[in-house]
Amino acid sequence: MVGGKGQLMMDQYRTPYFSGLLAYIAKHRASFHMPGHKRGRGIHPDFKAFLGENVFLLDLTEVQGVDYLHKPTGILREAMDLLADAYGADESFFLINGSTVGNHAALMAVGGPSKRILIARNSHRSVVGGLILNGSVPVYMPVQVDPELGITTSVLPETLEQYLTQYSVDAVFVTNPNYYGISGDIKALVDVAHRHGVPIVVDEAHGAHLHFHEDLPTSAVDAGADIVVQSTHKTLSSMTQSSWMHVVGDLVDREQLRTALRTLQSSSPNYVLLASLDVARMQMATEGRELLEYALEVAQYLRASINEIPGLYCFGDERIGRFGIHDVDLTKITINTLGIGLTGYRVEELLNDELGVEVELSDPNNVLAFVTIGDDYENADRLIKAMSDLSERYHARLPKLETAAVHTFPELPEVVMTPREAFFAERERVPFREAVGRVSAEAVVLYPPGIPVIAPGERVTPETYDYIMRRKEEGAEVQGAGDPELEVLEVVK
Ligand SMILES: Cc1ncc(COP(=O)(O)O)c(C=O)c1O
Image 1 (cartoon, rainbow, N blue to C red):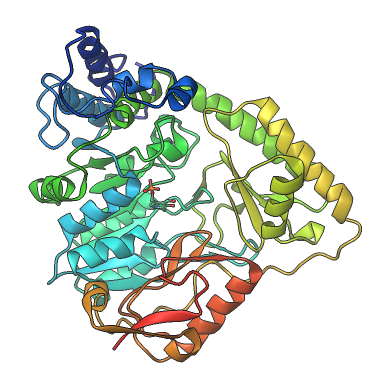
Image 2: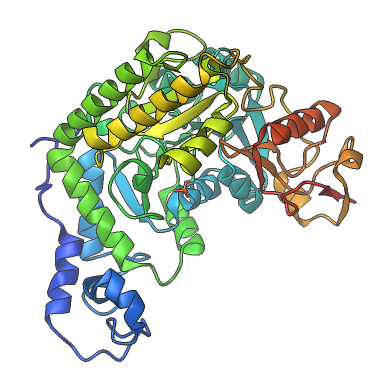
């Protein structure tokens, strides 16, 4: 069998869930159940004309024979068992609210009001949501920074060792790889956590593909992490909002995890999303290696071409071994734009407005382009042409820019109360400047890359205030807080 890095035991060409739904549809039963559009007959013609009939036939509900997400015993059970087999996990779960719900459920399984969780400070904002749900006390660990690229990289195993020696915690939570494809030494991190007897949850939202090609960084599943959450819609071919999650070993209470998922996920899961997960698993397990081989070739062509354009730099594996960079996912194309005198934000704007190219994100120093199994050379050429145009226009005219502020606020916060206590505390709105010295009742997240600078329960310092204002002026978008302009902030009364 072709596909992943492990030994497959099951017939990965099967798609029991998708095929089961097709068999159900073929029965043409009279439908007196949800969804209300009744297999598309009630859909507005304009919408149906665009989408076609089939998507509505597949948009079923929990009718007999098509199994239940919250109590899988039939075709969904088989589909999730095949998923676990494809990754070599002990158990896997389909998710219908992205990695967000995976992180929430994982934190509800390993945390609780009397527990402490050691968390890498570069975690996604969904982790704050998970802490509000589980009521745990967060203990934050610092993350390394690449000062030339201006981005955070990974937690060092020695940092984890030091924190686990200093603090008694119930679980560890890290994000790996990061948005830019930079991976820490995940095997060493897992080993350190396990030596201390605590489970490690890995947010591998950006790494669902890693398991399927030997030139990609090690997946946390292969490293033996206890829970691994993956956004299949980001790097594989399943539909937006679908994701999956794997469990390895028995350090995590699986019944608690299942209960958390039942609590957090809709009682009306979308079957189109679930079917897309079943097919994406089959695709990766049976031809993932070849598909990724091609994606890596396209990405390397793109990287080499960009590096020939004056003023641009797209890093590759030459950065391995420095600044916490243990490995690099070469399908991620981070283009440092400072050499043409433009911030990443400005380059993204020009690409969008004038050159017909849409990238994944920009930051003060870089634009980030994703290459996936859906790419080809023609698409790559459009980005190369656009970047050449920009270099020709600006490289000779503008001075090189200095690397701007890094992504996460470098100092660790003072956690005055848990995110949950702050979330439910009596609160008041004050002008943001006057929030300095107060305990925030809400999160302030800067995008990119969606990492909280302030979490509920933390004291706002003058340095945090200055950092946020500077990043905002550079063009970062404020998320998480009720007032996106951040003129006011909710603080604990
Ligand atoms: C590191 C990380 N974790 C979790 C998420 C949430 O994933 P999803 O959008 O699938 O809910 C994201 C989304 O961008 C992310 O970047």
